[in-house]
Length: 395
Image (cartoon, rainbow, N blue to C red):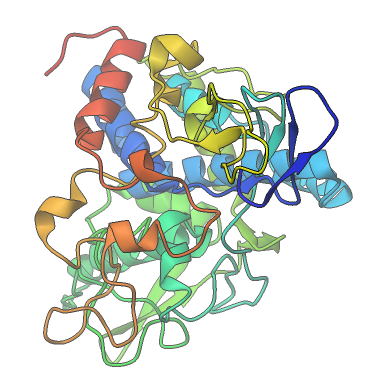
């Protein structure tokens, strides 16, 4: 164990650790959400008319943060705040594949009979930017890792607003051309960088919305106006709590759409357990050796990142090690494949960690080797999950 202490005089030697925390990269969750939407709308074509991908993504990210906040209460963090959050959110239908992932997120009882606790790499800021909370502060050489591994609710709301801007601009009497490659506000974006990429979790190019999708956002209290052909966002409907921007009418409408969809499997039971899947963490494996007198030997238990897959650790295939890992073959894109922003020359901004494997070794509490850029295609894994959950043949 990291920081292990062997207690002498106890048969077998008991390893103790001052910290048994681990961190997760949640980027694969965004891919699961995308795959879930694609498969769901293949089965229910009418759903696309009322529900955009950006709206569905916002909905699922709220579910993720609700789960994270719940898990944190096991150690007494934010118990009262979580109870208040439950009152502010409506009852929300949970798609099965999303629910399986959320079930896997949590604290862990290791094979060594020790408890391991989920630790966030950052906390959501309550600071309002254009009336919206849910950021990790300005994107810089440190905070970029948080934006690349934790979906920020602020980014999800911004994506919906830019979808609205693109749609509304094209429908004006004198159309306004809106660049689909939108950027974060000046308060957040790195200085001297172009638009971000999909490594900024929740970001994607703006897309045109249907009239029904626009109406849902407007009813929830979002709107876009133009001044000198520049979009200005109105966010009066957002209620901010614990750093989470809540659009209650929108969440309620999406929940009703999911529960009434022609594509079933959207009523997954919300987990009330603090425990998650062992697939999240590096595993403890006992070494068969004895401590010789005067010999310098490692601790009896060691971190060995042994890959544990579906049938070995979890009833849910979504909780496999391939899901809790860095997202979809980024290593194939080059040395800077993990960064949410690139410099003007296409390289890493000054002082930023350059690639995924470096990110996963920058501090001892990050996951071990199997959770870096692995060979598994996360995009295929997520799509396969949704197809199996909804019992349809692969496309």
